[in-house]
Amino acid sequence: MENRKVLKSGEFLIDTVQASDVFIPEEFNEEQLMIAQTCQDFLETEVYPNLDKIDSPDISLMRTTLEKSGELGLMGIALPEDVGGFGQSFVTQMLAAEKIGAGYSFSVAFMAHCGIGTLPIAYYGNEAQRQKYVTRLATGELIGSYCLTEPGAGSDANSGKTNARLSDDGTHYILNGQKMWITNANFADLQTVFAKIGNDRILSAFIVEKDMPGVVIAPDEKKMGIKGSSTAQIFYNDVKVPVENLIGSQGEGFRIALSILHMGRIKLGANVLGAAKKAINDSVQYANERKQFCVLISTFGAIKFKLAQQAIRTFAHESATYRVSKDIDDLIVINKASGMEHGRATIEGISHYAVEAAILKVYGSEALDYVIDEAVQIHGGMGYSAEMDVERGYRDSRINRIFEGTNEINRLLIADTAIKRAQKGDFDLFGPAAALYNNLDTITDGKAAGENYYEEKRRYLANFKKVILIALHGVTTHFDKKLAKEQEVMNNISEMIMETYLAESLALRIEKLETLKADNGIYRDMLDVYVYDTADLVRKSARDAFNSFADTELLEKLDNAVERLTKVAGVNVKESRRRIADKLIEDNAYKF
Image 1 (cartoon, rainbow, N blue to C red):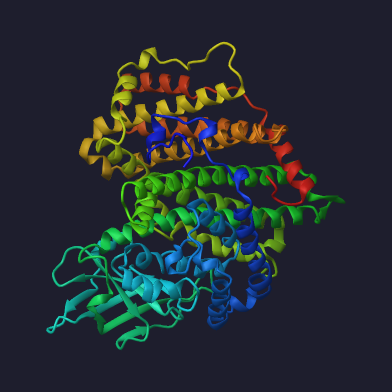
Image 2: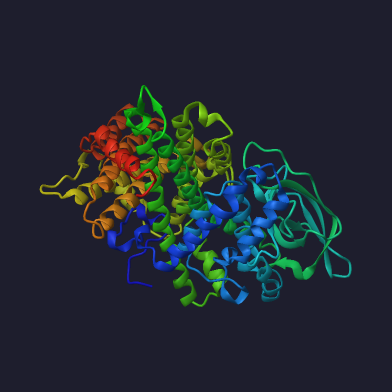
């Protein structure tokens, strides 16, 4: 591991890193790019030609396509070599997830298998379980699924009623219950099933084989999108599960479930990148072909605005995605050095960055929804036709805001987890927050003479963080233990945290990129627009939070402080966006 500064999850709120300390996509090595190309080639040869048939749906074709990806080694990228994988870094795993993310329904089935369908056993299973099952999951010989959600237990996963009773002879658990929304249900060989043993209050996790007597899989659900993905209910009627199929220890299932969901959230953040880039390519290529009023629609300012916004949001999200991915890689190395075995070191590294995982999940899924919605709009009437990829992409995109914990849950997690990490002593959030709050009248924008471009941007970002700290102190002091129930206020805090993290990640990437590329003008345009827009978002969210508790006198002080801290230089956003769009139009593809 290089000698670089790595922040703890959420610590970016009170600390910063240098541009040289972050990893950016422009630094992918030859092996990583080769893996990415292999994923892309697989989509081009095996997935795209068969999209309509896959979505018909044809689950036998989906199963066969998954098996082919396993034969190529794509299912083993995240797995260690001792179970037949390739032991690739987390950054590489995320790059592969990004590329596969452009695969519509196939992406959902593939990622469910490689992630939540395989990793609970890989990370928490014992050696016998890993050798028996994970070695075959790594090649696609077996396909995996993950069974957590129940009719009465969605976001509140631990409230599930599925029960496992130890048999009288102590050799089996007798499993009874029902699971729903199970991805890969009708062709998966293995199911990671969460259930409570006896009168336990906490879940345990089990490996259940599809062919065990008493496992009943319902017909596939009919869905708005991702139609090629098998999604069904599964019923367990006195299923005899061998005691050796308990994953981890009794009562550890809830921890396993949460850890795997953190992993799922952050990898979904990579998936949506691939889908967004595909939609942008579809958008600009259509805009460069379609004429209205005798000219290409790509020459229209309104279309350029859409193309530029698509690119800016995607580039910013990509910057944050690989920034935290490298942080996770470094923490995994630290965990291993402390004596953790590979699986635990990995899942603890991923789980630690819960704040950032939630940010990527929320921002990425909503950015993709924006990108694909505008892709449909750019296509006009053709965008509503099933002949076009953007129609499929539009329907498939919507599930991402529900997958892996709804965006409502994840928004709350952003603020709540950051507060709890600070309360645990991971970093001092409340000391700086109180100092700012108690000296509102003396706060200035901090502008210094002779600032260069990046010094100015760093000052803006530092000021946005000050606004977040002031708001945090105000709401935690006023609402105290009732804050968790003030979900609108928590969302105000989370919105500021999310947008500031994205803006900072974008700034760090572009500053570092300037040392690699001479011409950085287009990227500065992206940063100018993003920071300019973020200032307004931070100001609005902070004021909404303050209005929920402050009296007139205090509100005036808070508003004045926020006004100073969100003041940024004016930007000709029209021309900046046009330059970004012009590059996209000239390249006829997303090549940022």
